[in-house]
Image (cartoon, rainbow, N blue to C red; front, side, top):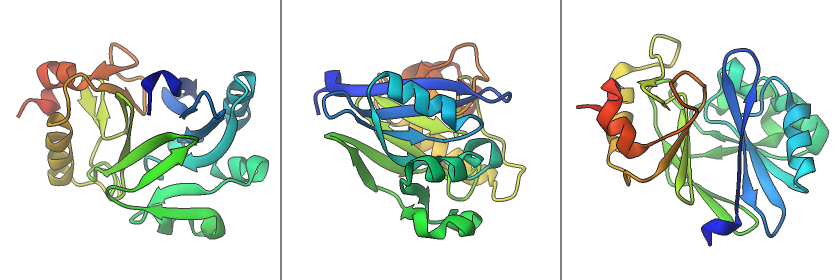
Length: 201
C-alpha cells in the first residue's frame, strides 16, 4: 500500500480526553472507525465530510469510554465490530455483529491493510493496530505513560511485556494513543523509548 493513499484522522471525543480514529483508503473511499465512543454521529460526520464510507468498527479494548458508541454505530451503519477474542464476552448483546480477532489478524479497508497486535495488560484483550507508518496503541501506550493495570482484566506483568514488544518496533513508527494524556497528541516509538519511563527497561 502506498502511504499516500492512507486516510488517517484522529478525532477527540468525550470528556475523558479520548481519541477515536478513522483509518482507510483515500482512493477507494472506505474507512473504519477505531474506538467508536461518546459521539458516533460526530465521528460519522467527519467521515462523510471527506466522502468516506464506514466499512467496520474496531475496538482497542472494551472499556466503556472506548466502546459506548458500539450500539449507535451498528444502528447507523450495520457494520461488523472487530474485538479481540478475549474481550468479546463483554459485548454479548452485540454477538451477531462481532468478529473476534487475535494476534496477527489483518483487516482491509479498500487496499489499506491493518495488522492487529495483541498487547494485554491494560485489559486481557487489549490490541493495537499497525497501518502504514502508524500504530494506534489504545490504552496500552500513551505519550509519556501507559495504561493502568488495577482495573478488572489488568495485569502489570503483561503490560510490561506488551510495552517491551512495542519498544522493539521501528523507532520511526508514529504512535497514536487512546487518550490525550501527554504533552502531545501523538509521538513516535523512538521518542517513547527515550522519554517514557514505562518504556525505559
